[in-house]
Length: 482
Image 1: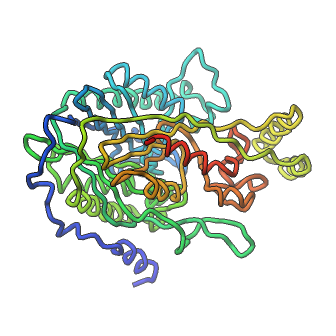
Image 2: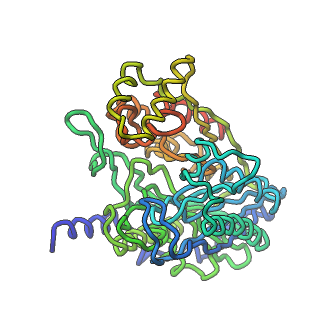
């Protein structure tokens, strides 16, 4: 057997979870809080794009479907009537304009007090865009937010699909609300690894993508589940793990939810047919699923492994006490790294003369320097959902390094935590302070000019976040549970 195949199979069987022989504690009776403290409902809708519509990243023609994409809604209401909708989509992402629009519309149409919209980050699906508006200019900032330079109004087929996704989000929350029933909430955790730390620093100091065997990951899956007080059967299970869904090869032209889709399928086969399983993407900015871009079969194997671990977490889960939902948002601004020096800009204007997009970015930086302006800051709203003393879910826009989720787990005064990224907006990466301090050597996720392969170099912010952003984010998160 080739070594690479042995390595893949060994990895997918490692960090073993006894999913196949797991107990079924969730089927047993449990002491339910009285009176009815919580109510729960869930629903799902398919959002698979039609054949011919491009897969977003890497851009390639869609010639069919390996496995369908879904949007799922989990609604929780407390005894006072306060309710929140957690919406999860099999999508690459969605910017602030899109998420603000979705959240406002769902609140209005479905009577929600709070709405979160999160994306799994599958690289074999689509970006969810904002709805075109005649009163809104399609600025460079909005182009970046939507992940496209071509206005959606100029692409009728994609506009129709995107419009249908927005409507299905409303429909699925409404259906979940209509199915609310008295429920017991539980939270659990189990060990599992389907990803690897992808940031490797060479001897010359430059960081590139590879397999950093000593690098930090998030080696667990956490769950939040709701169980009917009447039947004691699970109504929904929300599970979170941190890894880029990039096991499906970029050469495949089949739409896929990657390993999260396979994990959901595994759970649906093991749980009652009306139980909704939904995935939340953790702090995976520096974590790739393993093996990288190989086969759909490898993605399915990783998903089955994750699903089995989620079943173990469900079996070991503990009842959440209390009788109220607490949620809070801390609006936060992250400063951007200082502008490049005038000398560097002059050199790059010559070196990049054959790259019009880079020249435009350099001229914008020159204009900022000429007027003494600092580069634009980033919006970063930190969201928190707290249930009893047992559970806290943190939602963050953008993609964050695994150290953020590990810090939340250490710092939060709750028995169990989850961390969602790609939630309620944000396109791009928020690097760790250590990564940002490396400057141009910070790699794809954290590097700055003249490293043009770094993602944030071309952003409307003109560069990555400033060193010190890590502490700002941690302070905002800690304020959520103060």
